[in-house]
Length: 228
Image (cartoon, rainbow, N blue to C red; front, side, top):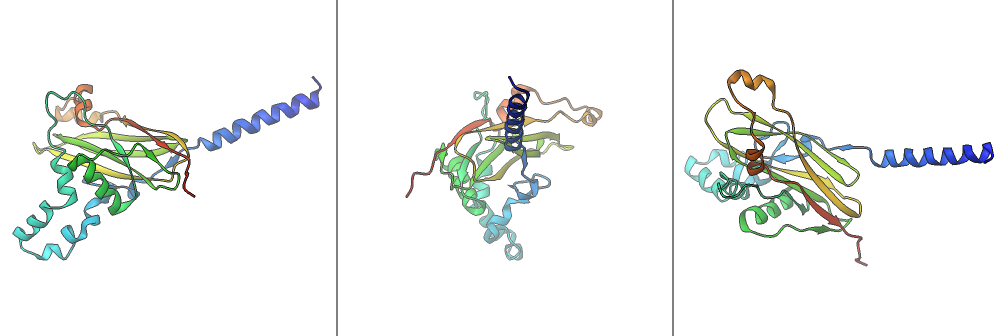
């Protein structure tokens, strides 16, 4: 093979690899863009129901505040995230819905609190939102980071033990935006247990507990838009 031809082929391969690497470059989703319940660094999801949790509500009596909050979308979701049944070894999968903000909160409530089936396929024109959640437990669940690599979404979280005996439950509404056509995968990754918690006499949460508490990975499809 002539040197010039070989060099051209090598350059073409290098360009192809560079394009692939660029395409696979991770896109970080800042925690400040995520709506969540009691997760540091995120936006307080209660802001999406200002008519039930906003400043005007805080001026009402405790009884009226309780009545409003108990009927909220958020309370309906949290009610379903109680301690998982002992006979269920694994938590439900996380899932995706179409829309953002209040729309995605409403869709999440329909799935978690009212038994609706989450959509499995989306249009390239849909704004896709992932709903991640954890069941009631004696440890906080904090989001660590979220990133998109190609068609794979990676959600990293960490268990943070309570210093008291309270139990908490959490959920997050994570906006992905529009995703490319094809199969999408959402992986949920547990970060290592912070060694400082050993000084509190707390042992790491087992994999069996994790399976029962944390929403599981899932897949979805973005189909080519067939609308005119």
